[in-house]
Image (tube, rainbow, N blue to C red; front, side):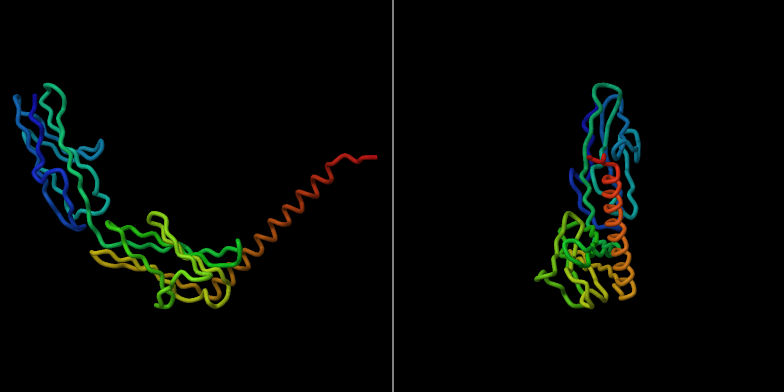
Length: 215
């Protein structure tokens, strides 16, 4: 049977995004086994007795398990697994701002943060740090970070920034909430509300018309 394949760097490797590296895996046996590197069902490199996997400019998508297999047709296929961790500065994406009338008129901003370690995330308005106070709610779920301001006056206008920082760097994304955009959104919402209440009224009228007359 083939000897267990051995990955040169061991079972765990953490590298910075943008690094290039070569990973060696070797196995012996009689006959000499075929050695294969794969990720999931995708074959990445192959050789006889050993195989070298070249990874150029590693990104966060490369993180995960890399498997090295050895097979010489005798016995089970043996494998060794490398858990590859990719460290990177935060990546921040601001989503489209949202205005809601429920439970009261307000502005909601969302940003998505990808980070290899737990980032510190701050919200700023015109460069001033926002704190969770009355009427200002800040919360997060996994990599989604949310700012809610429960008012619809000039206090919700201006440049908002979502800033994320970890030990490898910081990144921010901005959005400008302008008065024309805000006024347009409010009038769109009001016509939607009116349309909805008209639909409800029409449905009630239809039901009433369909009811049998009781003499």
